[in-house]
Structure formats: structure tokens, C-alpha cells
Image (cartoon, rainbow, N blue to C red; front, side):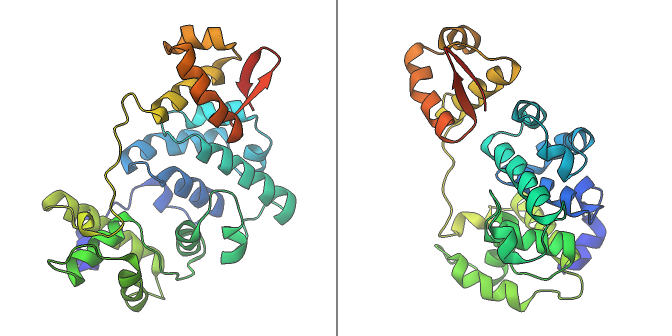
Length: 259
């Protein structure tokens, strides 16, 4: 059923699905964390053109990476992606490690992302759960149930894993999950891990993004940031320390700058 749907409706033309290049797969996985496919589809190829491999990304100033990342949100992912590229170049000779433990030791890569890279870059079957996979298994195996935990789902993902073609299988699962969400009430709402996303407009997350975007253009004083962003001084004072802690922003004398 899943594969028949994929043959008829699969999104096989997504640019990161046409490659097994580990670098390109890694970039796509970072971009797809908490960002919709449609938005990533418009940013992936320009980013790859600007930074075609680990070496070019590793030596790039963070300012340039942030500019290329603009529009995807969660700028800390861009910082982690560049740091991962630096580690791959310095420690692994520019080749992404194939081991799950090595992948999980890289910045911004957790168990699910490591498993996705193993499947999509190396054809190594590894079970993982993401939002669309979760929707499929809740729909199929937990009808009418609520508060379904990932710990209940993961054994089923493992039992249905296609060891010969894990790439196709997980792409098919994801696309089936997208169809389910469009055609009925989202099954993932019955997950124990579902949390309603907070409002973006006016949030600290939006403020962080606007401040980083402004500083990616040029270094500024806090007074200049107030004029550029329209935020009050108190808002700037409340947001900037977190950006500094995250390694995105630094103070250079009286100015703030991208790290």
C-alpha cells in the first residue's frame, strides 16, 4: 500500500532525493529540521551552489552562511552545520563518517538525524521516527488511541524496515504521511509527544531571527539595532545575551557582530 502510493504520487523530484552525496544529504537533513519541505526546496540548491562541499562550507565566514540560510529560521542550525563541516574536514579528511556514533557526536545531529543520514546517504537501514513516519504508524496501528508514545511506535518501524532499499521505504512512508495529514485529521495529534507550536509573530524566536539577519548585513551598535529592527532597547537587551551564548553573535567593542 505504501509503495503503491509512492509509485503513483512520490515526491521523487525533490533535489535531495536525487543524490546519495553525503554532504548534500547532510545539508538537507539540517534544513528539514523543523522547516517545511516547500521552504527547503527553494533554499537547498542555492545553498549547495554557494557551498558545494564540506571544505567550502568549513572555511566560510559565519556571516555568509547565515545569509545563505536566511528564510529557513532557527539560525543555530546554520552555525551547527558549519561547525560540523569544520570537524569533518579537520578530523575525517573531508569525508562524512559512516558510523552512527561518529555522526551523533557532530553538532546538531541527534539519533533521528543520524539514522536518516545512514539511510539516505549510505543505504544503511536504521529505524527512526519523524513527524510523517509517526503519522503513518499511528494511523495504521493505533486507531482511536491517544497519547501514543514513540517507544510504542519504534518497534513497529524496526519490524517493517526495508533492509534492501531503506531510502525508498522511508521516502514512501514520509510521502504517505503527508497524504494522511492532507486528507484527514492529522494522526500525529494523537501522539504523546505532540505539542502545539507557539505563535511566531511577536515571539522571541522571530526577534532573534530579525536581529541575526540585521547583523548579517553589517555590525551594529545596540542603538543602530533599535533603528534597524524597530525593537525597543529593552527587547534588544533581553534577546542579545542568548544569541551570544549560542555562539551566533559577539561583541566587538561597542558593536555587535555575527560571530
